[in-house]
Image (cartoon, rainbow, N blue to C red; front, side):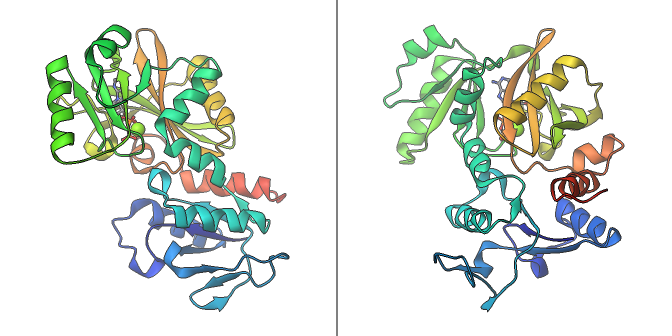
Length: 302
Ligand SMILES: Nc1ncnc2c1ncn2[C@@H]1O[C@H](COP(=O)(O)OP(=O)(O)O)[C@@H](O)[C@H]1O
Ligand SMILES: [Mg+2]
C-alpha cells in the first residue's frame, strides 16, 4: 500500500517532537506501507482534461499514491485544498475529503450544519460590528465564549465574564485593526475546565478521553497542558460523536463534547486531530486504526 500525508512541513524537516508524524512513519514502516510526507510547497499542479501528467512533486512528474491523508486541519491553506481537490479528481482516496476539511475549518458553518440536524449545540452567533452587546446579553447571556471562526489548540478562544470584558476585547481588536470573523457562544458552565474528546475512524469510536485543565483555565485542550484520562463511552456519546462525523462527512475526526449537566453539547469537530494525549491514556494505536480503515476502503483485507 502506498500513501501520502499532506502536512505543513516536508519529511526531511520533521523533528522528533512532531509526535503524530513520527507515529505514522513508525507504524507504516512496521506494516510495510510506503508512506511519504509532503508539504504543499513541493507540488505543482497542471489542470488539463485527462489529468495525465498533471502532478509534479519536487519538479518531477509523479505517479499517484493509493491514498492521501491531509493533516493540516483548521490551518489548511487554500493551496493545500487545491492539491487535495486535484488528487481527489484524479481518483486518489482522500481521508478526509477536501469538502469536509473546508466545512469544519469554519466553526460557525459546522455549528449551522449540526444545528440543522438537531444536534445539541451551544447557542452561537456570528459577531457583527459594531457589536450589539444588549442583543448578545438577551440572546446568549453572559458569560460568553468568543472564538475565531477558525482555530485550534484553544488559541483563538476567550471567555468574557461580563459585558465589560467583551467591550474591552472589542476595543482591543479595534485598536489593533483586526477584522477577524468571530463567533459568540453560550458558555456551557458545567463543562468549565473539562470536556470530552471522542476519536472516530470510519464511523467507529476508537477512543474517548476526558480532558481536564490543570491551571484553572476554562479550556481543556491537551496541547495547553490539560490532564487526560480514558472515559467510558455510553450510547449517547457514541451516537453523538459518530453521527456528527457522519453528518460532517469526516472519516477521521476528533469530536469535542462539552458536559451539559447529565448530557452533552457538541463543541467542534477536528479534521486532523492530534493523538498524543489519547494514545497516552487509552490503549489504542491511532495510526493502526487509520491504516486498517484505509485498507478496508481500498478493498484490501486487514
Ligand atoms: N461554549 C463553550 N462553553 C464551555 N467551554 C468551552 C466552550 N467552547 C469551548 N470551550 C472550551 O474551550 C476549548 C477550546 O475550544 P474549541 O472550540 O474546541 O477550540 P479549539 O479549536 O481551539 O480547540 C474546548 O475544548 C473547551 O474546553
Ligand atoms: Mg477543540
